[in-house]
Amino acid sequence: MSSESNAYRYKRLVVWQRAMALVVRVYKATESFPKHEQYGLISQMRRSAVSIPSNIAEGHGRNSDKELVRFLDIAKGSIYELDTQIEIARQLNYLKIQEDSCISNLLDETSRMLSGLRKSKSQYSILKTDE
Image 1 (spheres, helix red, strand yellow):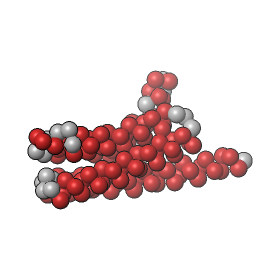
Image 2 (cartoon, helix red, strand yellow):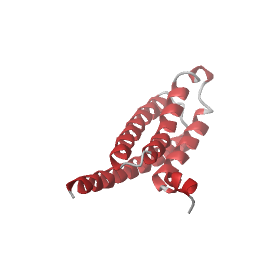
Image 3 (cartoon, one colour):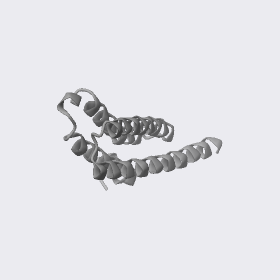
């Protein structure tokens, strides 16, 4: 495997792939939001969604479990932001039921996977420093 392909190993992480699918779903769902939300809720939801896989990638690129855990925490914060924004869109009846369900499922799955990855990296990091 070339060093260039090693640099992008995060793309093989299922959590990154799910987060990318979440971004696409959020972009598609927000296309039908009212135009007056373009610089409000639409922008916020898209930025929060994009932040999730972006932080997974950035943390992975730091080549340190401690740094990866820090960026996974930031990604997890973006999940909470997006969840809140989805709830706002839901209460304003901007989300179609099918879109809402798909986004919610992807959000839950990504959140669980992030938590698992964070836990495994945190434990590994602790073991490495104890040696």
